[in-house]
Image (cartoon, rainbow over all chains, first blue to last red; front, side):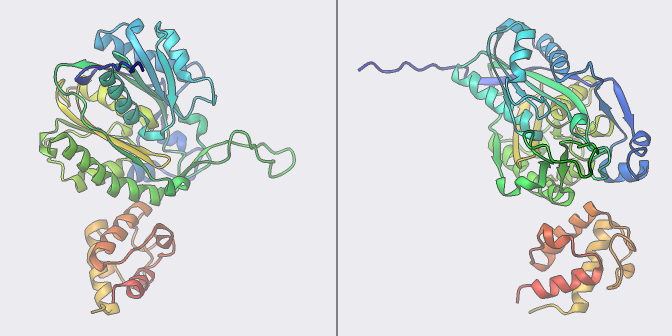
Amino acid sequence: MATIREKQGAAHTRIMGVGGYAPSRVVTNEEVCTWIDSSDEWIRTRSGIETRRWATPEETVLEMSVEAAGKALAAAGVHGDQLGAVIVSTVSHMHQTPALACLVADRLGTNGAAFDISAGCAGFCYGVAQASDMVKAGSAEYVLVVGVERLSDLTDVQDRGTAFLFGDGAGAVVIGPSDTPGIGPVVWGSEGDKYGTITQTYPWNEVPEPEEEGSEVRGPFLRMEGQAVFRWASYQMAEVSLKALAEAGVTAGDLDAFIPHQANMRITDRLVKVLGLPEHVPVARTIAEFGNNSAATIPLAMERMLEDGSAPHGGLALLIGFGAGLVYAAQVVTLP
Amino acid sequence: MALTQEEILADLAEIVEEVAGVDKEEVQLDKSFTGDLDVDSLTMVEVVVAAEEKFGVKIPDDAVKDLSTVGDAVSYIEKNQAA
């Protein structure tokens, strides 16, 4: 009987280039306070958010993805037609099928494999892990990972707990072969017993009856149990971060950047504290400007830190994404 | 040995002072965390996690919602502390 021939890919992988797209509309806390009974000070102390970006109708998930991807490809020195796969992480492409990734791949000029993943705010780190493994397995030489969201479409502007939190945007990286290790082992998992802590108010196929005849049915929207999510993200994700460091064989002091998902500045502060991160390690805090745009926060922050010089090219960064599921993923990477 | 109500209050007051920056003298049984002590919902989680460690009790998310006053928290810890 014939045996199947297997394929071997690259021994090591790295992030070759990063690109981001922040949509044009700046939504201030003052504007948010016209929707909910709150104040600039309340929002800042609870979340660290000063402004968030919301997309215009023209800034679709596709257009934002293509913009971010174009920058990542240029930075990587890779052409679109060289991409063997395109992975898009999103919860706000409003079609269950077909995948947004197919449209992105087409616009970039590749017929490579293309698919979306649903891992909420952990989606970018899930994509990086998957892409790295694909390059190592020889399934693709270059893989594009995009995190893109228009959470404004899923935000209930009347919900005091989340109206101020969410934003829109896109970030992308190109992952390819490397001479030296550039992407550490992923530490990831799910806690489905906490499925109900971040939810969509109703499924797409079950639009509820209006409360009163003739009244509008609003949503579906994202809902969150703030305290439960805060506890999980601030304490358990610190343990996951430490595991990712240990698996990569580096210590917190070796890091040149800490880039956690930008969920809430208070979560970031707690993580830094629990991790015992030395003061010299720069920490991503782009939530102040961009809000929480889920799968896009980490690549957007990475691009920003490289651009403003707070993190060095070639430096070591700890990434951790966590969110709806609940799901999480963390890995140490070399910055492009 | 189980701690008395007074001992729990004293330790909890220290936690609230450290985590939330509230003077521990202010932390009295009848004080409400949000209304009187200005401890917001996320800081409350930090107080709870520190209390779990200090007193060796489990305070699940569902229980946190019912702890509106310092007295509620002290009673909960008193009832649930390891014998």
